[in-house]
Length: 125
Image (cartoon, rainbow, N blue to C red; front, side):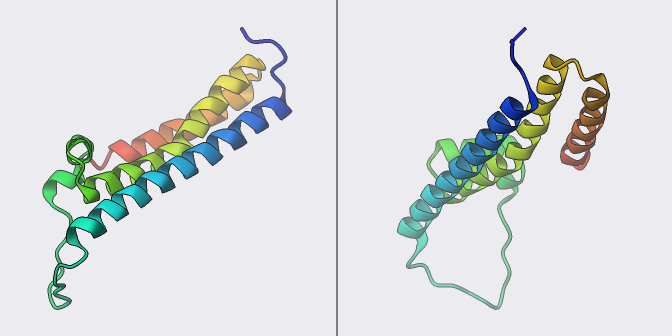
């Protein structure tokens, strides 16, 4: 068990976690956007027909495969996954922090929020 876990320390860590998560995801999206523009920036655009993302980019495994192959759209999608994972990680860390403080009520409430987040993320898959 870690000593000296207080509200202020948890708030500082959560703030840093959110800051790092947003900056990391923004950086990944930016890099993916640059790669996409270098490869497809000069391609003609057909505004009359909507073309969604390929089916492979609609699954987590497909996103990782596209990103590993350095495809711009896959890297952009990976950055968006990181952005979604940031508040989820914050809630998961909050459960740990409240457990270290031995604050059972907030562990229960935060666990319920975490369960709702997980359900909303994975129930539609």
